[in-house]
Image (cartoon, rainbow, N blue to C red; front, side):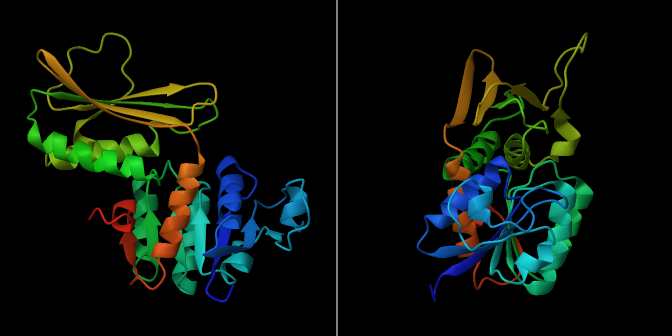
Length: 270
């Protein structure tokens, strides 16, 4: 335990929170020091193991994030944009490694996270899986190799409870495609087609979102040219891949200089 890294999980009762707790509990390199939930949640003040319907664990559920951040060496955060920004203000002061899988972040939110990264290690990614980050790199390379005669469409599918669209992963892939073509995604993004939309704009990057059932995550990047299509795909069948990636990032960040990092850095992809 002396060399074990203390992990704080923000948002313990959520789908990803529970998965992260399970992942940390199974790790020999890390241990859980505390978790948070929103003020007023029924778990507040309870033992985490008992709150989850199991045996007592000795880990408490807090509603004040500072109470758990000061006990940890790394914070793993799959919560909401506003909560994540608030957490980053704290981790910047305590110098914790802050791993962020929160999606739906605005440009202003990201600017605040980048400011916090001047003081602490922040690893932020729309998707923490190895496969998706390899897909992102391939997307950039293919986009760079093909000119605007190949239309780019990104199609993503997730469970019916997901609240943001396009997904963080789809946007990450869109950014990679835009980078491959040396353009800004905001200037070529095409979303929400409905009705008489007119012909597709040459060079635009389109997004489509599917929501339903218990789909974990599926992403296709389609390069559609005259007479041929190239399709790069990733299918996630187990949410644990995201938790394992987030824990890998938390361990990787120990001892790194302050800065804004991505999973590409963690995985040695540049």
